[in-house]
Length: 417
Ligand code: B12
Ligand SMILES: *[C@@H]1O[C@H](CO)[C@@H](O)[C@H](O)[C@H]1NC(C)=O
Ligand SMILES: *[C@@H]1O[C@H](CO)[C@@H](O)[C@H](O)[C@H]1NC(C)=O
Ligand SMILES: *[C@@H]1O[C@H](CO)[C@@H](O)[C@H](O)[C@H]1NC(C)=O
Image (cartoon, rainbow, N blue to C red; front, side, top):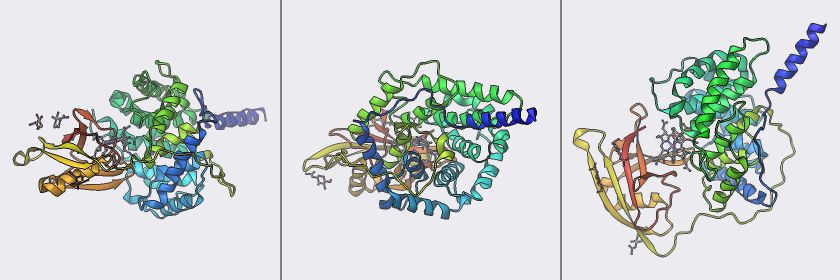
């Protein structure tokens, strides 16, 4: 009997350990709250306007409390209908978490993902860091569904990370931290301590890596990786060697929001949980009920800069020094577009003026991505893509959101990651 009590106590302790521990939390003040609500409304209203099904949006709205029930229904139903076999492991993981956050059973999608991850191999030693972003999401989703069965996969994953984690972008390190923190919190009672040591050691590497990218102004990596980094730093059992000032980061992000830097619904989906004190580790705890949040009264959220009557001139260069010895090119064109136009308008104008500038796009969770220029197409197997730069600095937004300034020199450079 005493044994049973002890056992039950242990189980209780283990269950308590699965809930998020917000060690370094900070919160948005009531006066600033309308900005956050405005973002949420913008994100939720984007759902009905797009055919693209983005599970990250559903996760964010369920975590923070949905206003737009219609959007929630549309996304949930579309995700239920998706065939898991056609998705990458990262997309499958987000779909599973999104359905779980809507209290739906992801069904066969979980075993499909589990099989994929059992076969997973890091492409090659020294593989570029972003190759771990999708697999990290996969470990996180599997951990939440069946942590015990995920241990062997997570152990193999963690051992690989130990050799590679210094190559990671903040985004990737943050998602890997969330995944291994989930595993760390669910190590079964009575199992050998060494899981805790392994996951703990890798987590320490990951958070130190994130800690090194905390800028003086509080931004972690860039503004679009900060939301995921905040989630990671607020739940991890290992603290970074560089101290993190959550308040400072939050204030800086609120400033950027007021400047209109979070128009892209996916950028909102990645920042919103952190603004409302939630993380992806809270997905299994979402309570679904008939009552819902009362839609907020809205303040003016900065809308995209309207295009104005005057024109600007942009120099646009397309450069391929990589593929096809006889296909190399480096050509520039000057185009005139309405001031306030997005970069996509520059590309369209260039294409209209000179057929060498023809390009193709594909729809993704972040919006339109340029997949091909002058018949040279990105290729995931070769790790090639079209990188966009302003002068020599890579852009931190895509062509459908970035607004060029007068006399800017934009380059599309075919390169490798
Ligand atoms: C991996 C990655 C890439 C890879 C994607 C290919 C691959 N096979 O892995 C490569 C290196 C090609 C890439 C390119 C770019 N990327 Co990128 N990328 C990421 C990263 C780290 C993970 C994406 C992922 O795997 N998601 C998980 C899967 C399951 O979701 P998914 O929807 O299927 O993922 C696809 C899209 O995310 C898409 N994608 C990746 N990056 C971008 C960027 C834009 C603008 C668009 C429209 C789509 C897109 O490719 C993914 C794989 O198919 C994210 C980080 C993040 N926080 O999301 C940054 C991120 C999305 N990228 C970003 C940027 C800025 C770019 C570039 C514009 C950089 C540049 N200067 O050229 C280019 C795109 C240019 C173009 N041709 O249009 C930003 C976007 C910010 C924003 N507000 O728009 C992010 C958030 C990084 C950051 N913190 O700043 N990227
Ligand atoms: C390509 O053209 C740009 C601008 O015309 C020039 O600055 C650059 O050096 C060229 N690059 C190569 C590799 O030829
Ligand atoms: C201004 O830009 C538009 C494209 O946005 C173009 O059609 C028009 O010709 C430009 N006007 C001038 C004066 O260059
Ligand atoms: C453009 O891509 C080539 C090929 O990968 C690379 O060598 C070069 O440094 C890149 N240029 C810039 C400005 O990033």
